[in-house]
Amino acid sequence: MKTKYEKNVDLSCPLNEYPRPQMVRDNWTCLNGPWQCAFTDTAEQPQRWDYTIIVPFSPESEISGVGKALEPGKFLWYRRTFEISDAPASSHYILHFGAVDQIAAVYVNGALAGVHMGGYTCFEMDVAPFLVKGTNEITVMVSDDTDMSWQSRGKQKTKRGGIFYTPQSGIWQTVWLEKVPQTYVQSMLILPLFDEGKLSVTVKTNAAAEVNIKAMDASASGESGQPIILILPEGWEAWSPENPKLYPLYVSAGEDKITAYFGMRKFSVETAPDGNKRLFLNGKPYFHTGVLDQGYYADTLLTPPCDQAMIDDITMIKDMGFNCIRKHIKQEPLRWYYHCDRLGILVWQDMINGGGKLNKITALVPAKFPEFSIKDSNYHMFGRESAEGRAQYYKELDEMLDALINCPCIALWTPFNEGWGQFDSEKVVEFIKRRDTSRTIDHASGWNDQHIGELKSLHIYLRPYKFSKDKLGRAVILSEFGAYQLVEEGHCFSKDITGYKDCRSREKLIADFTRLYERDIIAQKPLGLCASIYTQLSDVEDEVNGFVTFDREVIKIPAETVRRLNEKLKD
Image 1 (cartoon, rainbow, N blue to C red):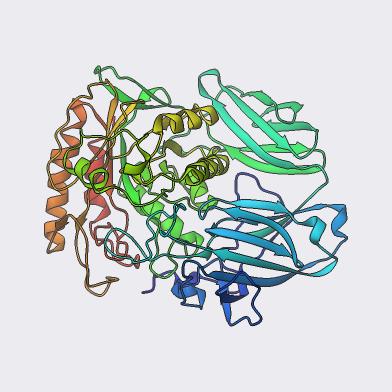
Image 2: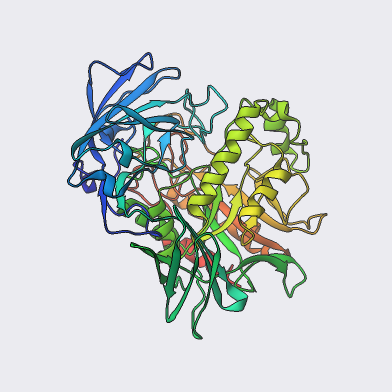
């Protein structure tokens, strides 16, 4: 099944825009495009390279040119060459991988340069010690057990079907090489101090250095690793979905020069004038009306086919009057968050689930009885017996926070969804808070609430929703609902369809959707409901409950119909 974006893909070097818009340098090389590829039964490098694969599309995807799945316990290999024109010892060369699913061993000119575990998070390594002037070779060995181990896997399943999707493997986000000077910036923490009209910037460098920062008409200097405070001039504008104002930020350390950006905004949970606990944006009550987004595409799976595909999804949701997207159990390429930042839409970011098989009680009972919950220190009930798997979860959570913490659009973190791989959520929340105190946390989306935090999170399908106050006085969010389905003939992935309410015609879908919003959302907001997330943005394989079909060809409900409903939710 193809998407309408197939013609937009440059197979010689797809997705070749600068991959990290919040930390831009001039001297970089995109390594996407044709690589050699092979599958092996052992961890021995192949003698033959049987395929040409288009990176960064997984071999399971149609557009990759391979059309073969990596089986658990086996290995996928990549190889390509690139040129270095100068003496590598004079600079650092940072090799970046947006994401490789699940475990990657990277070799440069035959030497092991690094190993990374975690199929959704970005990683990098300085490969200068392994380079030579002239032609150099990268080799990557990948293994992927999908759901056959405790590894993070999201919605991928070895045997796809229903609400679980075709598994993918290998390199699925941009690969790129960046030349940097001897002293260079490794990372930044950009924290808006909204109430003070200031910006805190902490810059980490590979060696001690003076750091200089500039934004608007302000500038400041300080040591690497320490917060540097910029006092912003009067007249700065707050970032919001209605006014996505971004400001450029310039950072230098020695010879290294970086262009970044920031937005001034503040997220909080406070008591509103009506006496209800509500989500606040920039000091005022703000209803989050959003859409669940799995981030799958028919011909490219988890990889967006092109930049325009990401833009179009976000723009469609904006045109419908939504102000929020829940990115469901997936970490997107950094350019997706950049488009959310500049176009103006809030993001609820899920952590990727892993672990073993859920106990049936944990998986099914809370769906019918939302107040029922199981203590998530009971690892057996949640499939989290592996101490190694729990430790790996923290590592990948830390990597996700590192990558996304500076994005103005991200309003909320969701570490666990419906009990999938849930464990020690109170400790996990504290871990997130040590890294980021500027955002809200939905510790257990849907059910298995551990009675902590600022939010009571509900998933309601197949029955009407009626607001009731949380016994602990927390703000109440409807973090999933809806999933009304409509089959669009000629635009379906499968004859086996999955959804919660079948609408036999476009007219019935529009009427039922309108009734749902008026009854369950618009009528409940004055009572205290402070957010709603409709399932979902697009059809995904067997699921036909999207606003748009899986091929992104047909929008099922007119934008103006949805927008009129969302207008009634404005504060």
